[in-house]
Structure formats: structure tokens, C-alpha cells
Length: 143
Image (tube, rainbow, N blue to C red; front, side):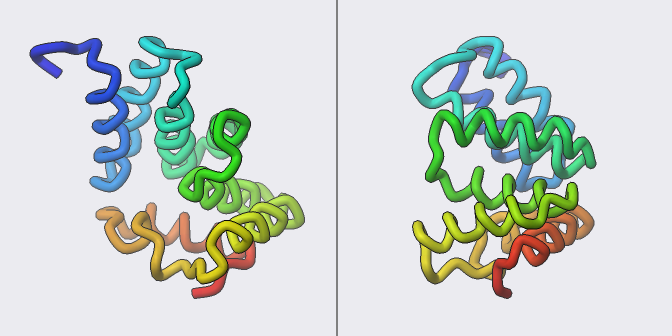
């Protein structure tokens, strides 16, 4: 980022990397900056998704829901976005909507299981991992 703080792809990748590293606040910063650089680009869902995830992990569920919905409008079949939308909706008590999203996940990937999701396998922060798993369970995804 030192060489080019306006590198959109780098900002988006740093947002994703920060999510996996258990640093959602940093991910939010990078994703917001990337969206400032390219708010309506063809692949903006790739930036909106880590933003939604970051907000979910820090407990800002309303923001997480808004950004996951925006990402799904852009790309309605992206599994990472669908997973977090299901977890967020379940965490907010919107169980029927979360389960509807879970059904869409199963249509795309019939073998979907919580243990196979990279965010579950590689998340560095146990609290964030558990928050995600709890939401997925409520949404009806199998272990």
C-alpha cells in the first residue's frame, strides 16, 4: 500500500486477508477505501462481502446485513456472501430468511458443510469463528 494507496485490487485482497487473520476492523477500513475507489464496479461484490463479514465479526449486524444484501444484489450466487448473509440473518433472529438462504446454498453446493468452509477452517480468532458457526447452525447448515 506504500507504493500505491489507491490500488483497488490490493485493498480488496487486504480486506479478505484481514478477515482471515482475525482483524475485522482492518478489513473494514480496506474495504471501505476500496469502495470509495470503485463504488459501482463490476466486481464490487468482492469488496462488499469482506465489508459485510467484518461488520458481522465485530457485532455490527445491521451494517453486515445491509452490505451482504448489497453484495447479493451484485452477485446472488456467491457462496461466501450467501454464507454470511445466512449467519447474519440467523443471528438477528430472522431464522426463516436465513434458512431460505441456506436452501439456496444447498442448490449451489449440495454437499455444503460447516466444517468445509474455509472461513471456519482458517479463521485465526476463535471468538469470530464461533460467532460464524453459531449463525450457520441456526440457519440450518450441517456440521
